Structures are given as C-alpha cells and as structure tokens.
Image 1 (cartoon, rainbow, N blue to C red):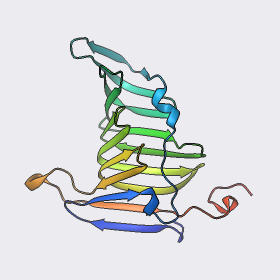
Image 2: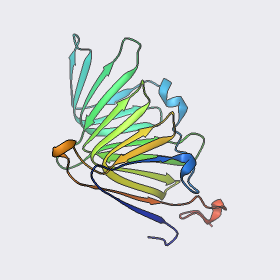
Image 3: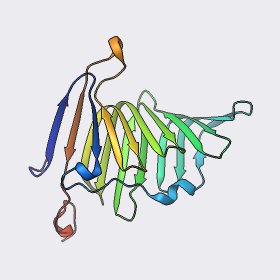
Image 4: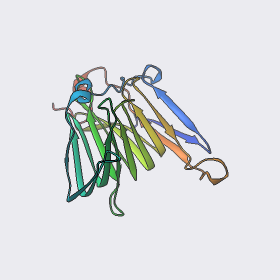
Length: 198
C-alpha cells in the first residue's frame, strides 16, 4: 500500500463516524450522478414474485439491478414503490458472495462501490445502506483511492456524506467492532495519480 495513504483505525462499540466531504483533507466530495434519480429501474433475475396488495416485487437468483449509473447485484431483491413513485430496494447477498453496489460520481471519472450482506436503496431519501461486513470504496479511474469498512455504512447522495458504524447490533446485543478507513488525498497533478497513463 503506498505510503501516501492516510490510515485511520478507530475503535469501538458503539462508534459512529461521519466523514463529511468538506472535512476530509484533500478528499473531494462524494457526489453521486444526479441524473440517476430520474432513470428507470431495470432488473434481471431467475424468478419474480409480485404481491399486488403489498406493492412488492421479489426477484430471486442472480439479481442484477441497473438505474442510470447505479449497478446492484445480489441473490435476492425486494422492490417496492410508494404512492409518489419513489422506489425502494433491499438486496441480500448469497452465502458465497455479498450484495454489491456501484455508482458513478457526478461529472468525474470516479466511482463509488460497496459490498455488504444487505444493501438498502432508498429513492426518497437518496441513500444507500450497506450492512453486515460493509465495505465502501472510491476509485479514481481504475485506481483505488479510498477504502472504508465497518458493520454499517450509510451513503447519502444529497448531503455528500457517509457514516460508518463499527459495531453490529444495539444495546447489550451489540458486537464490538472497528471502523477502518484508508483515505488518499487527491493528487495535485492528475498525471501523478496511481494508474495514470504516462
């Protein structure tokens, strides 16, 4: 791992860290592609069960969801839509593979991707929640820039912030955990960034 990377190892139960873009030294805001909100949600899976009374669609088996630059993969996906047309999704991974999320950042050649046993997409609040063994990564082009892990990560598109909780559960049932973060400052000269062509 390059020496230029800043490593933050934070403790303990219950720890919540809010990393606001304005406070991260040398780290650009994590603004998602704004046009994604208005794009249709496309889903592929091995099977579908629709409950009209509950307005819930349950997709099972090798699920792939795309919505603009958003890509979500998992073993099962539950999708519902509120009366205002806002969409909500819950994707769970398989025993072999966690659920996966990826989205392009606004007007940049940068992507944010994450994994967790469960991923919740809230179209109304414009948030992504990654839970249980959660990990969030930011790439500049193809080079890994930031890498964050914890029990729960909430990625908020509108406020350009994300929160990381190192513990799993609440109260007496909480499992002690740690938040781990590697944050790389943005290079002054784009040609010096790792993976940049010479």
